[in-house]
Amino acid sequence: MNPEPTRPRARARKSAAPAGAEPVLRVRTVRASDMAAVIALDATVTGLHKAAYWQRVFKRYGNYGQGQRQFLVATLDEQVCGFVIGEVRDWEFGAPPCGWVFAIDVMPSARQLGIGARMLADLVARFRREGVHTLRTMTSSSNSLLQSFFRSQGMRAGHLLPLEMDLSAYPLEGRGVDDEERAA
Ligand SMILES: CC(C)(COP(=O)(O)OP(=O)(O)OC[C@H]1O[C@@H](n2cnc3c(N)ncnc32)[C@H](O)[C@@H]1OP(=O)(O)O)[C@@H](O)C(=O)NCCC(=O)NCCS
Image (cartoon, protein in one colour):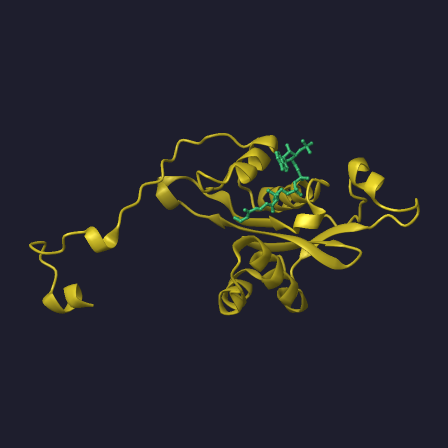
């Protein structure tokens, strides 16, 4: 969508060495060869090396950037330093089609250089091309870093309210569910 390579913003350049040796930032669709770096980056944030999970995500979203599913990576001098994943969902929760961003990560050593903002901008551009007018996400209520980031990009509390429950505490007895299903 936006093939223009850019420099990380001025604040980043101060910490980089001599002028002319500034790293080049690009955002592009993920490739199979990026997945080892994506898995390693996720592991730095979550502490879990979820190779099988990420291969499934790649199968589903690594679709060469076409259509409604997007899996983008940011690279600094060709090295993966971040990723963002999102998709357009139609009429879920009774809402008209809208874009969801459900994963974003920037390598800890490359944070606060504008890379997260740049990836989100590319995702927004791609969603707009799909004709959607709203971007949604959910964050853990304790992830204040992610909340600060999304707020800085213009996102505000929406009208959807997440609800959840503990399924192990849900009383299936007396609700007409087969014994076999209940035991499963
Ligand atoms: C949130 C995250 C993606 C931001 O990426 P980034 O490249 O550092 O963000 P940017 O440099 O583009 O910052 C954009 C804005 O976000 C906000 N922001 C970024 N880092 C911040 C911090 N540490 N504290 C407060 N605000 C912050 C700022 O408003 C910033 O704008 P400013 O620098 O002009 O003030 C990155 O910190 C990250 O990957 N965190 C872990 C995310 C995570 O938990 N992922 C797992 C669940 S999906």
